[in-house]
Image (cartoon, rainbow, N blue to C red; front, side, top):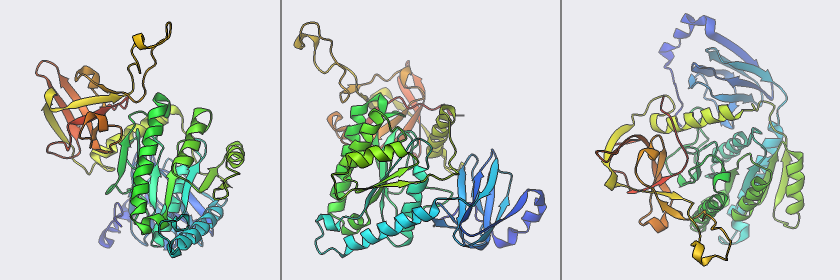
Length: 441
């Protein structure tokens, strides 16, 4: 596993030069060090004992460099000494954590994986490992618990599938997408989810309320694709999946949670920090004997974020896609003609012409209509998805190859300048536009 910011032993003496920023923290049994990195990077290493970050063990004596604004917790089951170099915005230790209940859940999931693997019939329900969906309100620690369960499973040799339905945050790729990827190793505490083989569908907005029907359809497309993969791979089927969801849990948001539970055939529902939601889900799912609804306490280290902070976090995630976590990537500026692309938006336009409707009725916008978009100044600062579709009619059912960012539109020359993660031609001429924008700073 690649850890960020490793420092050779010969350079460890540099720490004395900045002794004023060095801090030693002794963690007692089943306690954690909660950290919010400020505007400057923070270095951290494990001096002795054993500790982990969201289920991934820290290597002894190796410096890890955490980028600005990251929030994380270092937990120890026994005891550990942590050395920090830098000035975090916040750091404190806590001995009241829900980790024991989390690891108990993981033990049950491990038993179900082993039972599924031992099943003689590879296409029956018995051969299906746990399909865990993590639900709860905004800022309840859903992403953190998902990471722990995935890393613990990977540590034991499984390759569970991570499914991210939280389009506002984007744990696998940029916000505005639903995505899935196999987790083959414990998740790197610095670099996060690996991006080697993600399956990504572009929704194009930061909230499902922009187009609820499209969100449902894309969730279904992703679920069907994973079902096909599971049918052909007994190992992945037994390992199961962990599904992270958004924090919208009331009204339409609640309906979308039920839709996800049904669509992915989830058999374990973990409810974080919300008694009302737990009660509602337990009642509605009580007639399904194969579905367990479990209430879990949220971590006391969860930080509430307002809409401005969330918007900033989305911007950082988009920037990270093009430039890397620590500016280690070099995106390429490309110039193309208007005619090189076909840009579409999903949703809009009437479902039927007014002449075909009853007298007095207004045409209703079709949320799944694929509408051509003129290449003009309206595309400036938009993030566009590059679709694998071979035809416009396939755009909704096709996953995407990646993203570009429009930096300039020259209507006189009919050229468009865009930023791409790599040089060369795009893998497709079909681009999808939503409302996802970014101002490069």
